[in-house]
Image 1: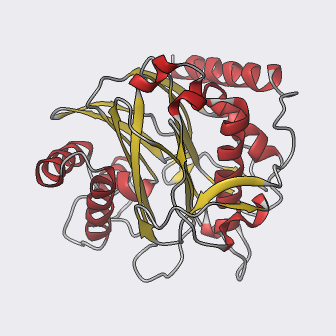
Image 2: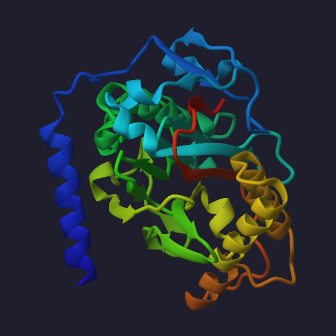
Image 3: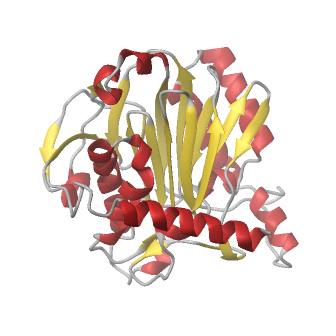
Length: 330
C-alpha cells in the first residue's frame, strides 16, 4: 500500500545516502566557480564567472557559464542528450524578495521553497533554501548527476542557517532517463505533445503542511519520494515551486508550453516566464477555483481563488547537443 511504498522509498534513500556518506563532497564547499543571478529575474544576465564563498554565494549578480558535454559525462555519446534550460523566479505579489531558491547544473536542476514562518521576524527566510541550492549544485558537480540524493543530503546536513525548505532535485542521465527526488510540494512535470506525461507526487503531513527540511524539522532527505521517468527528445521538463502548482492546472501548463513554443520556438526562458507570469496572475484572482482551492475543499478547508506565493519555474527542453549551464539563484 501507500505506507509500504513510502517505507521502501525511505529505505532506498537512506541506503544510498549512508553507502556514499564518505564521498569527497564532505562538508561545505567554500571555494567554487559558478554563476549567479539576481533575486528576481528571467533567463541570462551575463557570462561573467567568479570564485566565491559558498555560504555567501547570493551576494552578487553574474550569469551563465557554459560547460562542455564531453566533460560532463566523459564520453561523446552523452552529447546526444541534454537539457536546454531557462528559468523565471518572482517573489509573491506585494513583496520585493522571495524565499525560493534554485540551481541549474548541466543536466541537473533543483528548486527549493523556503518557509517564511520558520524563521524569527527580521531574519532572512531565504538563507536556508539558498544554502541548499548553492551546496546541492556544488555536490552535483563533485559527485556526478547520478548522486543527486547524496548531494542534497550533504547540503542539508551542513546547513547552518535557521529556517526550512521543501526540495525537488532532478537529473537526466546520458540515456535520457529522468531521475529525481521530491520532498514536499515543489515538483516536476514532463510535458509531451499535448499531454502531461508525468507529474511527481507531493508529500504533506496534512493539508498545506508539506514535508520540509529544516533546522527544527524532523523530516529528512531519506523521507523524500524517488521517481524515474524515461524522457524522449522534444519533451519539456518543468521544475517549479508550489507557486506554480497551486495556481495552474497541469493541462493548462501543457497548453501554455505549446502556445509559447508556437510563438517563440523552443526557448526555455520564454516558456518559464510564460508559466510564472500565469501563476502570478492566477494567484491574485478571487473568482477562480485554483488547484489549491480545490484541494482545500477536499480537506474541508474554506479557500477561494488563487494562492499568493513566490513563483519559481525552470523549463528545460530535451534535445541533442545543447549547451549546458551552471546557474544558482541569488
